[in-house]
Image 1 (cartoon, helix red, strand yellow):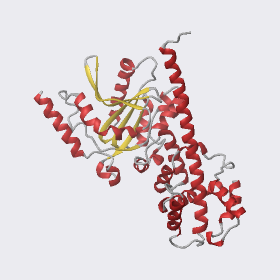
Image 2: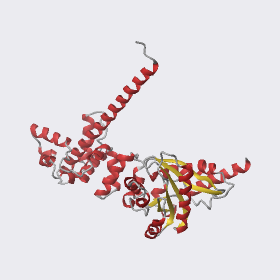
Image 3: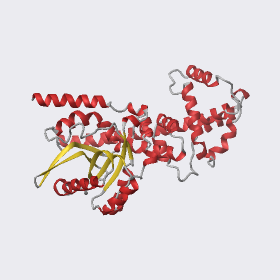
Image 4: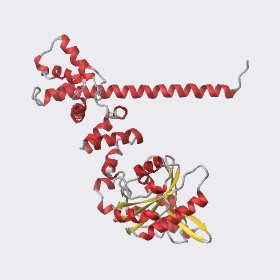
Length: 393
C-alpha cells in the first residue's frame, strides 16, 4: 500500500515526541541521582568536618585526589564539596525520622580511622541515599526537579525553611535561570504573595479563578520608575508604537517578572469609545487566567479616582475587545504608595475585578537590583531619540 508524505510526517512527529519525552525522563533521573549523591556526600563531609575528625585543608586534598583518581571528573571541586555540605545541613531535618538516619553512625568516624571493606561498602550506599518517605508534607517532586545549583542559590539567599520551599516551588514552576534567581529572591516575592488588596473574590464568579488571580500578584513591585506624564506618553502627538518598541522593549524583561503566562500586548494602547479617547498604560494577556490584564502606572499616592479610571478601561475592554472564549479582563493600579487597607475597602463597590499594588523607585532599590534594569537616563535617551526621529519623519 502506498503511503503519502503526510503519513510519514505523522510518524516522525510521534517518534520525535517519544524521543524527547524519554530524554526528559533521563535528564530528570540524572538530576535526582545527582541530588541524592550530593546530599549523601554532604552528610558524610558534615559528619567528619563538624566534629573535627578532618583537619584544615581536608576538602581540598580530597578534591585534588578525586580528580587524579577520576580524570575528567567535574562537580567535585573544594567549593562544590562545601556546597554539598551546605545542601545537606540546610535540609538534614527533613530526614530526621527517615530510615537513612540509621546509617549516619557509619559516617561518624574519621577517614583516617580506617574502615573495613563491609563498612566501606555501607558508607558508599549511605552516601547515595536520600529518603524522605516519612515527610508527607514535603514537596519531594519539586525538590528533586531543580538543579543543585538552583538549590545552592536558594540556600544562600533565602534563610527561612518555608521561604526556601516557596522558591523551590517557584523554580519548579517557572524555571528561572540561576543567574536570574538571586534577583527574583531579592524582590521578596515570598513575603509579598497574596497580600495585594483586591476585589477578585467578589467579582470573579469562579472562586478557583479568583484564588489563582490572588496568588498571581504581589502587593509591591520593584520598578525602574517610568513617569508616563513626564515622558509625554499622554500627548496625542506621541505615537504609541514608538513608545512600545523603543521604551517598553527595554524594560519588558523586568516587567515580565509579574509571572509566567503573561503575553505583552502593548503600551499606551488606544481605545475610542463614543468619541472619547482612552489610553491604557500597559496591556497584557495572561494565558493561565485566560484574560486581559491592564496595568495602570501612577506617580504618587493612591487616589480613589484611579479606580474609576481603571473601571472605565475594563468596561471598554470587556465590551469591545474581549473575545468569546476569554474571561473578563482584570486591572491593577501600580502607584508609588497606598494605604492598602483603605484601597481594599473602597474597591468593594466596583464591579470589575481590580487590585492595587505599589512599586519602589530606582533610588529606593538595593544596588544589586539595579543591575537588572536599564538606567533612567537610558530610557530618557531612547525616548528623546524616538521623538527626534518622529519629528524628521
